[in-house]
Image (cartoon, rainbow, N blue to C red; front, side):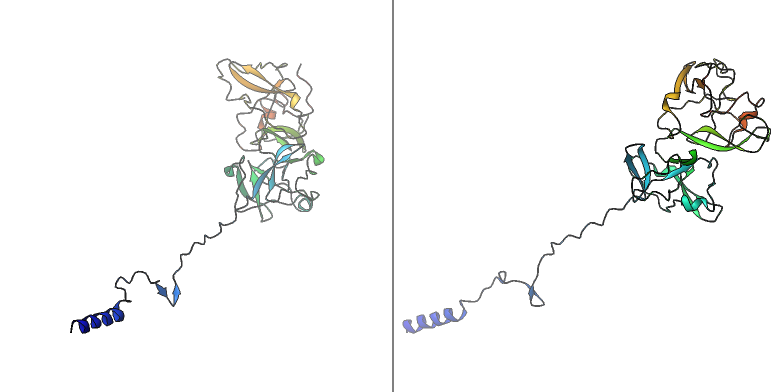
Length: 293
């Protein structure tokens, strides 16, 4: 009997011994396929290309370009908040415009703005100067437009001054010529990068300011030009500029003449000082000036 019992136990063990009660070693199937971890990482989006860039130029140093590296220019007739390049002028000097300004390091987007042109189009400006292309620039890095007719200059991020040409209109609302007689006609002269006219005082002498009081009580009428000179348009010679100390403040000079602003020039492009207090007492500064005596 004992032998029969042992035989039955052996049969039971053979029938049920292969089953597992932990159930944890079998793979988990989803739709009959093993579940896999997704280790794939999405590619990063391509970098956004700046619409305005800086380029190093062997002749001019750092210059402002579009996204493709084409040079951009200032126009000397653009003394006010408008563009004076109209009609056929645009065939040679096309407008630069970008609705969304993104800039390289070294530029500030806040220095760029948009103007509505008189022809109904828009144009991008830099520090108030409308920007243009030159039709004869065919490749990135070309600067063939600089100096054309002494009124077109490659745009630089660090210009301190600009050379402009405009009608002189005195504080008396009369039009003047470059010899300070009444008449219609444009005159060349120097402005700061914000478009403010620079003057000399006919009674000054070489590197000597004979106008400003020691307490600066008359400085509001003819403020001294306190400009830290950096880059210049190519028509101006850096060697013609200097500086003098005026009662502890630094005044910029040109060919030995101390430079001033006129307090009543309140709008970009104003040159009212040429008639105050009389025509010729406070001339504009330009390349035709003789060295101060």
